[in-house]
Length: 126
Image (tube, rainbow, N blue to C red; front, side):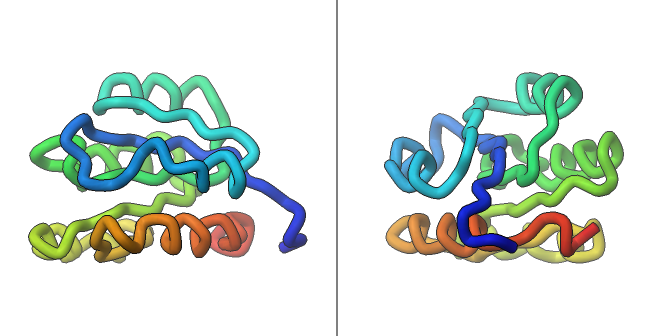
């Protein structure tokens, strides 16, 4: 990947998220960032747009992995990253089998995780 390439990102957030959704890292690392609250809006945007990467806080719904599976069912080649808090590590089981990348993460490492996601080349996964 060219270091100059910036990806289009959909960030599925939750109003209760412990991650700083207003971090300036989004604008500096990605070409376009759409932030949505919840499942319905996320599915609508996935259907209507192309995103290089989808990033989801797994607290979005009680069955957060279910939303990511729906996205994979809609667009099987979609690159997805899931953020999982240490208290929710049980959600990690089965995620890799769905072709979803996951970070077990505490809030203080959110910006570093975004940096790693930004240098990931989605075309390599496909």
